[in-house]
Image (cartoon, rainbow, N blue to C red):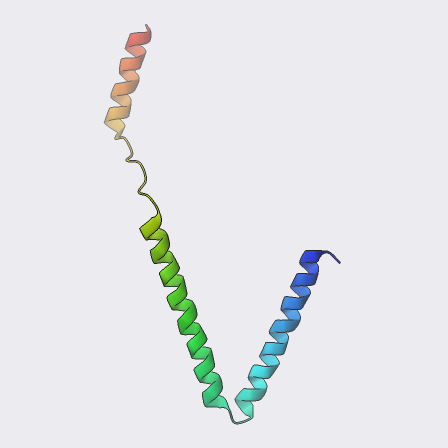
Length: 84
């Protein structure tokens, strides 16, 4: 088994174990605690992704301006005239 396959198997077993624990706690009378934990993790994940997008947008330099088609055609025709 390769390293990637081993990691995949560990992730699979871990997720199945988490699902079993979630189901047990949900039906063992701890529903409010389970819902609170799940909602907290979801809020943290969504806010974290939004913060990462904001950070990326704030720290990425703006792209170079695109030349208009008229400028490109004028430059091309000037170059063609100069070469002949």
